[in-house]
Amino acid sequence: MTNVTIVYHSGYGHTKKLAESVLAGTSQVADVSAALIAIDAEGNVPKAAWAQLGASNAIVFGSPTYMGNVSWQFKKFADATSKPWYTQAWRDKLFAGFTNSATMNGNKFATLHMMMTLAMQHSGFWVGTGLMPSNAKAAQRNDINYVGSFGGLMTQSPSDSSPEEGPPPGDLETGKLFGKRIA
Image (cartoon, rainbow, N blue to C red; front, side):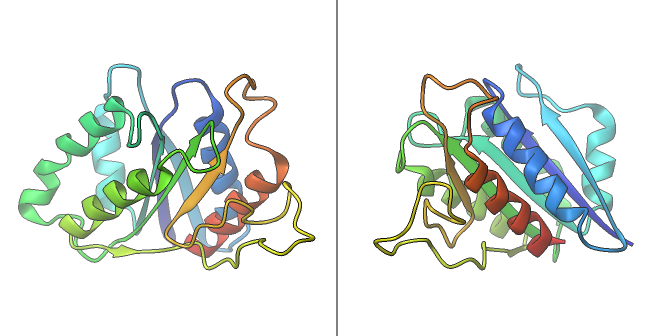
Protein backbone atom coordinates (compact mmCIF):
# COMPACT_ATOMS: atom_id res chain seq x y z
CA MET A 1 0.00 0.00 0.00
CA THR A 2 1.18 3.50 -0.84
CA ASN A 3 1.11 6.04 1.99
CA VAL A 4 0.52 9.72 1.23
CA THR A 5 0.69 12.36 3.97
CA ILE A 6 -0.52 15.89 3.44
CA VAL A 7 1.02 18.27 5.98
CA TYR A 8 -0.37 21.79 5.87
CA HIS A 9 -1.01 25.03 7.71
CA SER A 10 -4.26 26.93 7.25
CA GLY A 11 -4.73 30.31 8.84
CA TYR A 12 -8.38 30.93 7.99
CA GLY A 13 -9.65 27.58 6.68
CA HIS A 14 -9.20 28.04 2.92
CA THR A 15 -5.98 26.01 2.77
CA LYS A 16 -7.55 23.30 4.95
CA LYS A 17 -10.38 23.02 2.43
CA LEU A 18 -7.79 22.70 -0.33
CA ALA A 19 -5.90 20.01 1.66
CA GLU A 20 -9.16 18.08 1.95
CA SER A 21 -9.66 18.26 -1.83
CA VAL A 22 -6.15 16.89 -2.45
CA LEU A 23 -6.91 14.11 0.06
CA ALA A 24 -10.17 13.34 -1.77
CA GLY A 25 -8.21 12.93 -4.99
CA THR A 26 -5.83 10.41 -3.41
CA SER A 27 -8.83 8.28 -2.41
CA GLN A 28 -9.63 7.76 -6.09
CA VAL A 29 -6.58 5.49 -6.41
CA ALA A 30 -6.69 1.88 -5.18
CA ASP A 31 -4.23 0.72 -2.51
CA VAL A 32 -3.47 4.25 -1.29
CA SER A 33 -3.68 5.27 2.33
CA ALA A 34 -3.67 9.03 2.81
CA ALA A 35 -3.90 11.30 5.82
CA LEU A 36 -3.86 14.95 6.78
CA ILE A 37 -1.55 16.49 9.36
CA ALA A 38 -2.45 20.02 10.39
CA ILE A 39 0.30 22.38 11.50
CA ASP A 40 -1.23 24.22 14.46
CA ALA A 41 -1.35 27.96 15.13
CA GLU A 42 2.00 27.73 16.95
CA GLY A 43 3.73 25.99 14.02
CA ASN A 44 3.78 22.52 15.59
CA VAL A 45 2.62 19.08 14.51
CA PRO A 46 1.72 16.24 16.88
CA LYS A 47 4.71 14.13 17.94
CA ALA A 48 3.28 11.08 16.14
CA ALA A 49 3.27 13.05 12.88
CA TRP A 50 7.03 12.63 12.51
CA ALA A 51 6.76 8.83 12.39
CA GLN A 52 3.85 9.10 9.97
CA LEU A 53 5.86 11.36 7.66
CA GLY A 54 8.80 8.97 7.86
CA ALA A 55 6.59 6.04 6.83
CA SER A 56 5.06 7.93 3.89
CA ASN A 57 5.91 7.29 0.26
CA ALA A 58 4.76 10.79 -0.66
CA ILE A 59 4.65 14.00 1.37
CA VAL A 60 2.49 16.87 0.18
CA PHE A 61 3.14 20.33 1.64
CA GLY A 62 0.42 22.96 1.94
CA SER A 63 0.52 26.56 3.09
CA PRO A 64 -1.29 29.79 2.35
CA THR A 65 0.82 32.41 0.64
CA TYR A 66 1.33 35.25 3.09
CA MET A 67 3.44 38.22 2.09
CA GLY A 68 4.89 36.31 -0.86
CA ASN A 69 5.89 33.07 0.89
CA VAL A 70 4.76 30.28 3.23
CA SER A 71 3.18 31.17 6.57
CA TRP A 72 5.55 31.44 9.53
CA GLN A 73 3.87 28.34 10.99
CA PHE A 74 4.79 26.31 7.90
CA LYS A 75 8.32 27.74 8.00
CA LYS A 76 8.68 26.61 11.63
CA PHE A 77 7.62 23.11 10.55
CA ALA A 78 10.08 23.23 7.63
CA ASP A 79 12.90 24.21 9.97
CA ALA A 80 11.99 21.31 12.27
CA THR A 81 12.51 18.88 9.37
CA SER A 82 16.25 19.37 9.83
CA LYS A 83 16.26 16.23 12.01
CA PRO A 84 15.11 13.89 9.20
CA TRP A 85 17.20 15.96 6.76
CA TYR A 86 20.39 15.28 8.73
CA THR A 87 20.01 11.52 8.26
CA GLN A 88 18.35 11.88 4.83
CA ALA A 89 15.43 9.88 6.23
CA TRP A 90 13.07 11.22 3.54
CA ARG A 91 15.43 10.49 0.63
CA ASP A 92 13.71 9.35 -2.59
CA LYS A 93 10.19 10.13 -1.41
CA LEU A 94 7.76 11.93 -3.72
CA PHE A 95 6.95 15.50 -2.71
CA ALA A 96 4.38 18.00 -3.95
CA GLY A 97 2.90 21.25 -2.75
CA PHE A 98 -0.09 23.55 -2.86
CA THR A 99 -0.95 27.08 -1.86
CA ASN A 100 -3.85 29.51 -1.78
CA SER A 101 -3.90 33.30 -1.61
CA ALA A 102 -6.37 36.14 -2.06
CA THR A 103 -5.04 37.30 -5.43
CA MET A 104 -4.59 35.41 -8.67
CA ASN A 105 -0.80 35.83 -8.51
CA GLY A 106 0.05 36.81 -4.96
CA ASN A 107 3.59 35.51 -5.53
CA LYS A 108 2.31 31.97 -5.04
CA PHE A 109 5.20 30.58 -7.05
CA ALA A 110 7.62 31.79 -4.35
CA THR A 111 5.68 29.66 -1.86
CA LEU A 112 5.83 26.60 -4.12
CA HIS A 113 9.50 27.25 -4.82
CA MET A 114 10.25 27.25 -1.09
CA MET A 115 8.44 23.90 -0.76
CA MET A 116 10.25 22.51 -3.80
CA THR A 117 13.60 23.59 -2.35
CA LEU A 118 12.71 21.88 0.93
CA ALA A 119 11.89 18.69 -0.97
CA MET A 120 15.18 18.86 -2.88
CA GLN A 121 17.09 19.32 0.38
CA HIS A 122 15.48 16.10 1.56
CA SER A 123 16.68 14.44 -1.69
CA GLY A 124 13.15 13.87 -2.86
CA PHE A 125 11.36 13.95 -6.21
CA TRP A 126 8.98 16.86 -6.92
CA VAL A 127 5.58 16.20 -8.55
CA GLY A 128 3.91 18.98 -10.55
CA THR A 129 0.27 19.23 -11.49
CA GLY A 130 0.50 17.56 -14.89
CA LEU A 131 -2.47 19.71 -15.90
CA MET A 132 -2.74 22.04 -18.83
CA PRO A 133 -3.89 25.54 -17.88
CA SER A 134 -7.29 26.90 -18.84
CA ASN A 135 -6.00 29.85 -20.83
CA ALA A 136 -8.20 30.15 -23.91
CA LYS A 137 -10.64 33.02 -24.49
CA ALA A 138 -13.48 30.66 -23.59
CA ALA A 139 -11.93 29.80 -20.20
CA GLN A 140 -14.04 30.46 -17.13
CA ARG A 141 -13.08 30.85 -13.47
CA ASN A 142 -14.28 27.35 -12.48
CA ASP A 143 -12.26 25.55 -15.15
CA ILE A 144 -9.55 23.08 -14.18
CA ASN A 145 -6.16 24.73 -13.45
CA TYR A 146 -7.53 28.20 -14.14
CA VAL A 147 -4.71 29.77 -12.12
CA GLY A 148 -2.36 27.97 -14.52
CA SER A 149 0.38 26.31 -12.51
CA PHE A 150 2.61 23.44 -13.51
CA GLY A 151 5.01 23.45 -10.52
CA GLY A 152 2.36 22.71 -7.91
CA LEU A 153 -1.23 23.52 -7.09
CA MET A 154 -2.13 27.22 -6.92
CA THR A 155 -5.60 28.39 -5.98
CA GLN A 156 -7.29 31.69 -5.16
CA SER A 157 -9.90 32.71 -2.62
CA PRO A 158 -11.13 36.32 -2.47
CA SER A 159 -9.91 38.09 0.67
CA ASP A 160 -13.46 38.57 1.93
CA SER A 161 -14.60 34.99 1.28
CA SER A 162 -15.26 32.43 3.97
CA PRO A 163 -13.86 28.89 3.62
CA GLU A 164 -17.35 27.88 2.47
CA GLU A 165 -17.01 30.34 -0.44
CA GLY A 166 -13.41 29.76 -1.45
CA PRO A 167 -11.44 28.29 -3.05
CA PRO A 168 -13.99 28.01 -5.86
CA PRO A 169 -15.23 24.64 -7.19
CA GLY A 170 -12.85 24.58 -10.17
CA ASP A 171 -9.83 25.03 -7.91
CA LEU A 172 -11.07 22.28 -5.58
CA GLU A 173 -11.55 19.95 -8.55
CA THR A 174 -8.01 20.81 -9.65
CA GLY A 175 -6.93 19.83 -6.13
CA LYS A 176 -8.63 16.44 -6.48
CA LEU A 177 -6.91 15.80 -9.82
CA PHE A 178 -3.58 16.82 -8.26
CA GLY A 179 -4.13 14.43 -5.35
CA LYS A 180 -4.97 11.62 -7.76
CA ARG A 181 -1.76 12.30 -9.72
CA ILE A 182 0.36 12.20 -6.57
CA ALA A 183 -1.25 8.92 -5.44
